[in-house]
Image (cartoon, rainbow, N blue to C red; front, side, top):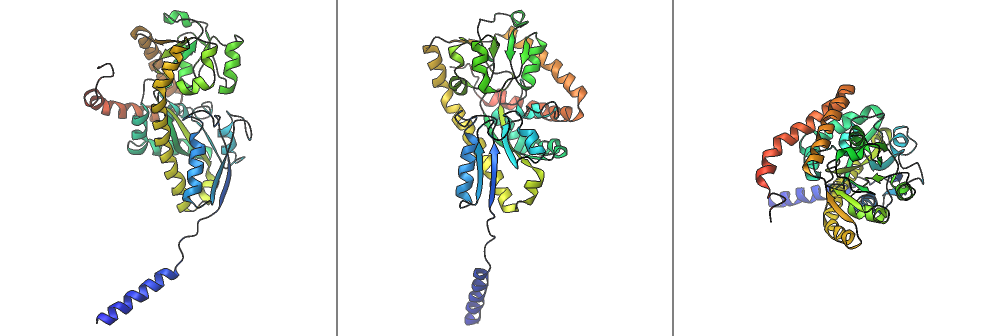
Length: 350
């Protein structure tokens, strides 16, 4: 009997060893990016994801990143992926708001979910299902693939003491934040990051928001505007996504799909950790170089919050999917509010 058991075990072992593991398929995609790979935590996340995918796949998955404008325009990634011009692209979600209004909420919701909360909503609050629902009609499979700490509220050439001083101000802003700045009277325009320094320098802009301190430093805004306003009420989180053409995604083996999605999840963690690690040092650098770090007071924040509610009502009335996503985010935020109020030390506690 013991001999028979050993023989059976040996036979099973031989049979299992004779079945080859699922072969790793070869994937070669060019990935246009909306941000330069030099921009810390914002533009270097996708290159990191790409390198990790090469390692976990033994070199068979190669998502080669391309700098903004090299394959498609920086703000044209959604269209390029949707039409199949490229298999995939990496960008902030919201530049396509004219075609996908709800995209703005996934990119950043003013006075909304901070980065850890946004990740919680995506992974455990129904956010990912809504994300896929929003983009399916556009032939895009979106994957949450990066998030950074709050952005600054903006760089201004002059001190802003009241909402009235924003009226007519030439200001660059994206997404819902831009609509709110417009609501309070600013003259808002949308320009890619690479054009902003020159626009500020030449007076085309009186101010701009773009990203968090390390990225703003790399773009040199502190050289042409000395008033740096916080907090980033308009973007409590800034969320990046890997857009994949639906047909291209469907051709991948399940193993490859899981490798890409799991590595993007790791990219979310790495981007947030890097973003949080570097900002305090950067604010100290700005102060040393003569930048005035200014905090919008309660009156200003209340004005922005009032305008934000008005914008959300208007956008929800225009697009049912926007309303569906917004309602989900607000409900998740409300459900967790008491925990955040009681579970964490107040930020002004010393």
